[in-house]
Length: 536
Image (cartoon, rainbow, N blue to C red; front, side):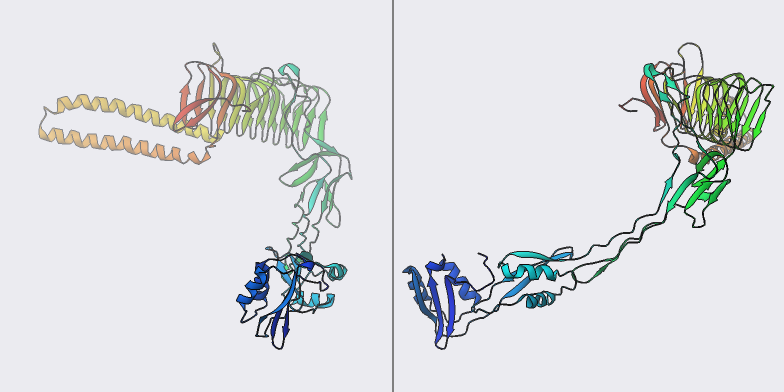
């Protein structure tokens, strides 16, 4: 059992004298066993032990006795010591005090610290704690008095945006499945000298050190994100504060920030306003009448209905009341298009399309189409979409022919379909030629050998022509394959209607019957229709 550092009275004790080693046993000082006696003799390295006498004395079970256990007076004597145990990560160590052996030689606190250092401890010794606990130390108890210092990593620099830098073009969902396309936060306005971004440089860290004296390097903080100032932006001399240099809309994209002047029209675009071609953003409170054109280098927002007009934004386009194109309207956006509805219109989107419904329109979309709201349907016309289509209903049961082409960018898809049609034409033409060849064989077999040789040579040349033509078209088509978006799919929350023509990743299918609540995608040159899982 552990005990205080001062020398205590022990139930078992050895004492070396000139004529040998004497063993004292005293039950008044504590209990002991035969093994305790043997352990002490072994630890003390007593030689020539008289085991006969020892066993005789122990068997007699005396209460107190001192007798000579060996005629050899050599015995191991050890002063009080310390044992140091270093943790596996070398970030801490414990000190255990060991009692003196066969003597009363104790150490002081200063000597204890020196003994700890001799155990290769170079750092982290808490000397104050050692001096504090030393008078009441207990043998055999580990004391955690050595601690390394962990490295303190630097803090990354950061950019604090004083405006909403995240796009959120999803409409607000209302009760009954309706959506409110006017409740979309699409832009941030700034006044001259408004602080837009505050940059914080990285903070320095500090190296650490383990108890063995090894330096532990810290991780440096990453610099703040690099922000590229664009037009109408002021940067402070220290480069940490970015402000607006004029009134306008804040545009942040690809770590570039600028303030774009905004043209606002509070009425409809009609003969009073005329066509618009503006370097910046355009906000129209009213609608756009048929025959008018609006072009802008940044976002366009239109609060009223767009008729058969031409609308083009190099960035994003918002048609809050929808577009009724009457077969002549055209809307284009380099980014996303968000609309209440799209009807009988030609649509080109470099990004995604968000709408309630799309009907009888020609759609070209380099991202995905997501339809939400009460109708959420894509009916009639054609759509070439690269990534995905998510809607309640696709196609119509009785009237409108609907064609969906999915997986390739619109530009690549047009070329792909053109090559596919050429391949199909050449293949059908060769089939006719081959049928004629088979009929001719019946006649040529009756001709002379020379005539048969000439015919066979001509047939080899004809077949080689068609084979080469098909190979040439196929290779050209395969060059477009890398443009395919591999995870393209259609998600129909209610159904894909019979008669809808699907072309997904090069595979065609015309639905013979309705397919309810399904996810359509290409798998091993087939279009699979899997049941929708929860959340899809």
